[in-house]
Image (cartoon, rainbow, N blue to C red):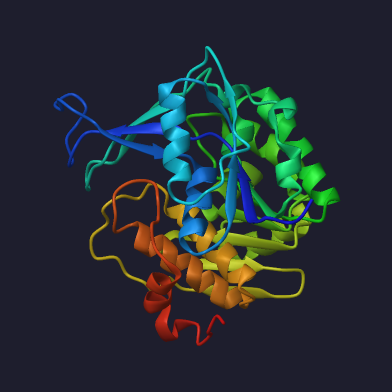
Length: 323
């Protein structure tokens, strides 16, 4: 079977409902309808950057499940590998967007969703075999025991087929405890070429040192992955390999944050895209930071920006061109 996709992702996508503006749920009379899921977010972001992408999942065979999938497909993502099942439900999350001192508030209604029941038998392995790069996150194995086992099976399959594998820890405290997440996710890391982890999650889940540079070095050696990428929020990011450590500051300042949800997925997409373009680790960190900054300026989970958009922001920061 001929190669077809630059990137393939697998995970749950939910309906996202949010009160207009900065209203609270208690006061709103309507909700804005959008979609959100770490893996589909990343696939859509990469499609906007010009890559051929695919997304796999298990979704309910009803109007709502079909609508979610059609919205993902509308951004150019291949969704033909999605398994539709009757009599089940799509996950939903509600978010109140806020400005300081009031924090954003998320309410999940996703327990027992069709995607949370994913098992190895639901996966279109033939489609995975058509891709060059597999990307998943720690949200999927957090959903259920069957999702956890399926993630490991997918990683082993992709590794045997020679795919590049990336994994974002993407810890969600509403889904499981830090201790449970750390124990479940660590065995997966040795199967990955790239691991993305926020410094705060590195400390909470894996007991990493408080000093970011030391934490990146310790975890890369401990996980045995090729590249460990540690995000530091407004301080920037670090890429750690066996032989080098590269740190870049966050040079793209956002004067007004519109919506933080999806910024981590945007970072992943920018970094992964730059790696596929053949750029250095330093340049890839800059592209990740740029995509993340751009995402903060628009509502919703998605970073709907083209390569030209990101190139204009990066400008001379990387002193690299993509041909």
